[in-house]
Amino acid sequence: MNKTIRKILIANRGEIAIRIIRACRDAGIKSVAVYSEIDRTAYHVRLADEAYCIGAATARESYLNQERIIEVARTAQADAIHPGYGFLAENAEFAGLCEKNKIIFIGPKSETIALLGDKLAARRTAIKAGLPVVPGTDIDVQATKDVTASAKKIGYPLLVKAAAGGGGKGMRIVRSEQNLEESVESAIREAGSAFGDGRVYFEKYLENPRHIEIQIFADSHGNAVYLGERECSIQRRHQKVIEESPSPVVTPEMRRKMGTAAVNLARESKYLGAGTVEFLVDNKLNFYFLEVNTRLQVEHPVTELVTGIDLAREQIRVARGEPLSFKQEDIRPRGHAIECRIYAEDPHQDFIPSTGLISDYREPSGPGIRIDSGVVSGSEISIYYDPIIAKMIVWGRTREEAIKRTERALSEYRISGVHTTIGFACSIMRSEGFIEGNYSTGYIDQEFPDRNFECPQSDQTKKAAFAAVLYDYLERQKISITMKKGPETRNGWTQYYRNQGVNRFNKVK
Image (cartoon, rainbow, N blue to C red):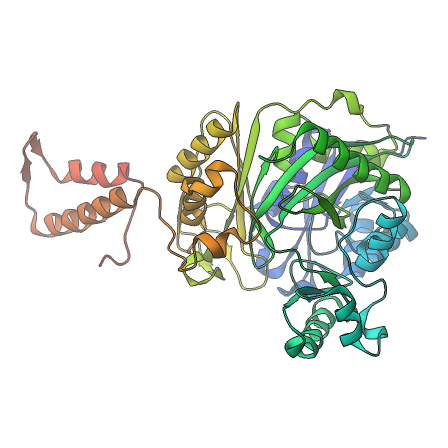
């Protein structure tokens, strides 16, 4: 029996909130935005049909305030809540609260989220479903009196991992017994602080693996499919920054095996909606189950571009109780897609966040270019939330074309006021290992140990800076100048440096 969804509250902010608002409009559904006090003028607030303040700037007082979000959903008479990713997206308690209040949670059932959100429970479920797993412990380290004995059974190097959460938190690489106890205690403290759950466990550490994930989708009618893979091995601090689909190393046979394994796990866990089964792949192309993300992924657009399927819109269909609009045989990926996450970070300072006001923001365009952005000129990057600005997703008929098009688009991207990862992404596109498809999760540290990343069009930017300084001088002195190619006035210089993508310079050295 299909459920009625006329209005959806988006329990998130930034580019993912905007993405879902657009999916709602495409489906003829009203959207409700929520915002913290510091996000009062945010772009997603202006774009939604309705908007409600839910608390102070900190996530704990706003976007993580479950009771307040439910209260707003009732006030706005929202039929459903879409959690996006991050915040409450994989919170089983929140999904259960929605169910209790008869509000449709656009995602898996609360019991499925609880099962797969606990990495130990997910690991056991994967084993039951027949998936290969990395050798590791079956019980959490806190329940083990002698962590040394458990570590010796697995062998060094090993990985200490938090049983709850993700994003690299509560994770430590241990290469010898000497620093085992300290690493375990540190991981327990960090996991407890980040997730309210200090349980950790051991897994064998794979040196320089690839990180490849499978997009799955399941409905309430017993249908479950996989939509190909995404290569996510370009990472910093265990977090993805560049993704592509298809992977340059996955063969059709390997794709079928990984996809079948992911679907088996979906069926074993009674999965509903969009999800991602993540794998580690060694240098012999053996794959091992890593974890499940019970939500829409940040990198979902690369799958959308190669399959032509709107995953956010499909989530709404499945939440209504409708069957999937496609079958496994309908999934025929075409071309190649690359996503670059554009963060407000300083890559030269080991990717530390960069906060401030975006004084100028201009996106690239052209064939095959898609920008999922959460900001405009004048937006503020605050200390309170993840510093992602936008996602640039590029499609090409071939991988080579997609790389070239990505490099071109990055060179056109203009963001002033904060440091960004644009130059870093451009360096990756130009690097030999990436072009050849020969890279792993350790690629950034191996290829760029000194963090020497190029800035796109650096020569033109320097010329533009010089032109700006010269123009200001001429303006003050009221002097006209003559170029070799003909007479030029101050207005000519103005046009020159504006053409270079520069509106103003606060400091020029």
